[in-house]
Amino acid sequence: MTDASLTYHEFDDCLWIRCNSRGSFVNSPSLKSIAEKYISRGGKVIVVDLEICPGVDSTFMGTLAGLARKLMGTGGVLQIATPTQRTRAAMESLGLDMLVEIDPSGAIWQGDMESRRTQLTQDSRQETTADKMNELERTRHVLEAHNTLRSMNHKNNEAFGYVCETLEEDLMRHEAELDD
Image (cartoon, rainbow, N blue to C red; front, side, top):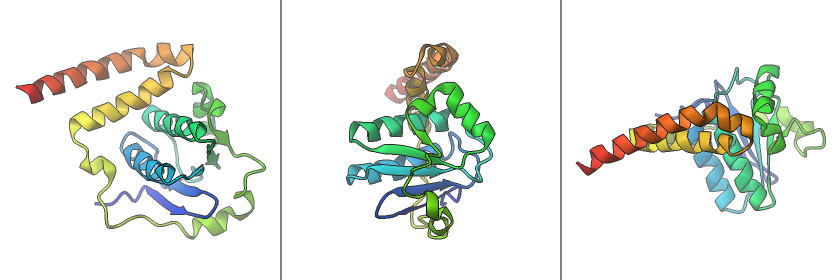
């Protein structure tokens, strides 16, 4: 199975990833995998195109924040292209606008978005990262995304504290089951 919700292309100046459906815990592992491969090869600019994405959940936003931090550590940047007003508001409410550039006016891609979008493809040879994940790995991914959000500010720490505690309990239970 492939993840049709994400299409992407590596251009000379950036990696462009388009989210073609809701950004969620389902497709965020694939987003992370695609982006981390690019970063590991020295890539510095990732553009996440949200033009037709109707919304994003906290796991997706936490994944974006984690990727932005990795890029910042290498002198790179994560940019968001054309989010809906609702998605922009959700990102701003969690403080993502402090880590990512949302519709930056001077971005190298601003003049040729439509041309770039026509070159996007999905990798039909591979299963989605989410399909390959077991329950333990999926829980770790969701926990990592929420811990990233928690670490961004006091408000997020309060908002996601219970979620993280619950996920940590799930992890301990799954790990104990594996040990048995």
